[in-house]
Image (cartoon, rainbow, N blue to C red; front, side, top):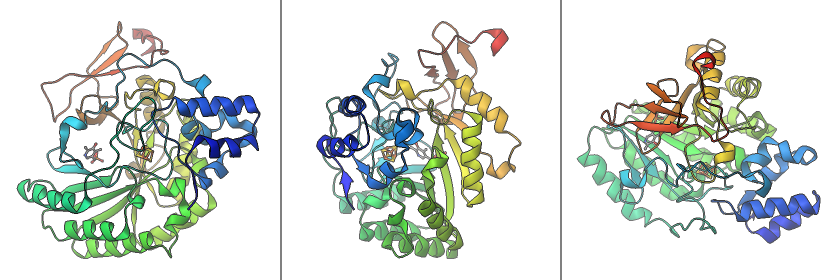
Amino acid sequence: MAFISNSQALENVLLTKLDPCICKDVLDGLEDSTMSIKLSQHILSLINWKSFKSDPIRRQFLPLFSEVIPDHPKLILDSLGEKKNAHGQRIIHRYPNKILFLASKICDTYCAFCTRSYLVGSSTAHVKKIKQLSSIDEDLLYLENYLKTNTNIFDVVISGGDINTVSNKVLIRTLELLLNLDQIRSVRLGSRILTFNPTSLNPDTQLFETIVHYSHSYQKKLKELSLQVHFNHVNEISPKTEENISYLYKNFVKLRNQTVLLDKINNEYETLINLFDKLIKLGVQPYYVYQMDMVKRTEHFRTSIKNSIDLEKSIQGVYPGFLTPKFIVDLPGGGGKVSVSNFYDYDKEQKCYLYHSSIKPSQTHKYYDPIKTEVLNDDNS
Ligand SMILES: *Cc1c(COP(=O)(O)O)cnc(C)c1O
Ligand code: SF4
C-alpha cells in the first residue's frame, strides 16, 4: 500500500489539484501540526478538491496553517492523563473493570486532532514522541500477568494506533490470549481502516478472516469480540467502505461507531443525522459522540459544551434508544467518560464546566469551552 508520507510527495500531489498558495498553506499547516504526515491514497480520493477549504475530509487530515488559531492556555498534550494511568508501555488502566491496550502507535493516515498525539505517529517539530513501543512479545506476557493479578478486569479495548498495523500473527496471539482467560467477557478492536483504506478489510484479507473467525470463537465461549470504528462524516463511507461493512455484518461482526465532534466538520444536526442514518442502515451502532479532548493545537477543532448538549437533545428520540449515541466528555486529567450534560456547575468567568466522575469522586474536572465561545448566560442556557 502506497502512502504519502513526506511533504515533497504531498506537494507533488497537491500541485496537480490546487493553487500554489493553498498548497503552501497545507504544507505549512502540516509542518506546524502535532501529527506527522501520512495519508492514504484513498483518503485523498474522498476530498472534494473544488470545495477544498470547507471539505470535511480535508479539514480532518490536511490542516491549513491559516485556519489554526492560538490554543486555549489549558490545552496540553496527553489531556486525558494517560501516561499517569499507564502500566508498562501499553496498558492504560483508568476504570475498575476495563483497560485499554495499545496495539500499535501507527495508523494508515494521521488525523490532525488525534487525542494521542503525544504518542501516535513520528515526532514533529512540536512533539517529540518515542520511536517505537517495546516488544509486543514481552508486552503480551505483561498483559497476561496484569490481568491475572487484576481479576476484576473483564473488558479490553485494543487500540492505539490502529489494529490493522499489527501483524496478523500478533493479532491472533492477542485474541487467543484473551479468549482463553476466563475473566474476559468482551474485547473491542479499534480501527479507522474503513475510513483510511477499506480494501485492507476486503473479505479476502487476513485481517477480515481473523476478525470474523474470532468473532465466532468468542461467541461460542459466550464472549463478545467487536470492531470499534471511527467515522466523523458520511463522506468517509465510500462504496467500498459500505460493501466491506456489509460483509462484516453478514458475518455477524458487531460494529460500533465513535464520532468526535469537530467544528465546521460535523457539529450540526443535519451532518450528524446523515452520518447516523447511513451507519444504522449498514448495521453499525452509533455508540459515542465525543467532546473533543483538550489537546494541544486542536483549538480550531473544538466546539462548545452547549453545542454538544443541544445536539444531544435534538437527536434524542430520532432513533430507537439502542441506536442513539451517548454524547460524552472524557474528562481532562483522567476522570473518565461522563455524559456531557452531567456537569454540576458552570464558571462564567472562566467559561468552564465542572464535572465529577465516579472513578475519582473527590476530584473536580474542568472542561474549558473554546476561547471563541460566548459566555453562557442564564437566559441562553
Ligand atoms: C474509553 C476508554 C475505555 C472504554 O470505555 P467505554 O466507555 O467502555 O467505551 C477503557 N479504558 C480507557 C482508558 C478508555 O479511555
Ligand atoms: S485513527 Fe485514531 S489513533 Fe490514529 S491518528 Fe486518527 S485519532 Fe489518532
